[in-house]
Image (cartoon, rainbow, N blue to C red; front, top):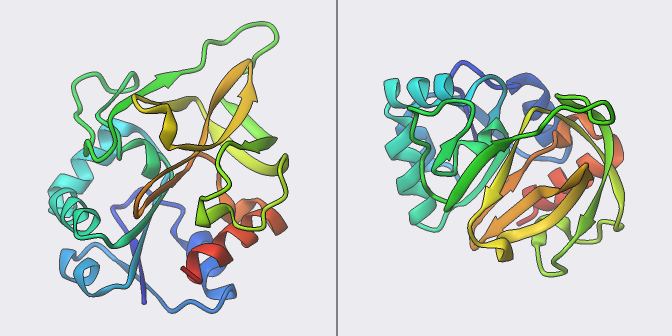
Length: 202
């Protein structure tokens, strides 16, 4: 069973549909007890960093997520769901993230050549051949992004794939049992479904 964290701000339906298309059984939940019973956890996210932190705390999901990740359970954060795993964000200066990964969430600087948000298809370049989430993924695969902020890990070794948008930024992060995607696999067609399949089969 894969638990999909529902904190009132996620792209729940599309993520659930993608997981189930790869044979997974899922439960959409805001109950911390369901996270402890699940084999894996997915944390999708759409919205603002500060609002997400408030909603997680309101449901006691912040402590539940930390507990499950620290126990070794396989965990995937998607878009905002990945950003909240870090310590802080330029989007919400007063809000503290979960701090499961060291680093910050920074904002793209708009320019004549660079539109913000970064929206649409872009290529990712693998920087690790050992990340199980990217197993058998062709390098330079196109995936779908929609974000104005990007993660800036303190430890660059956790970056498993990067993307070029003015500068290189972390598109995939990986540390032990903890995975994060800046793009939306549920919207990334064949490449995204391959990643979803890899996650389900872990």
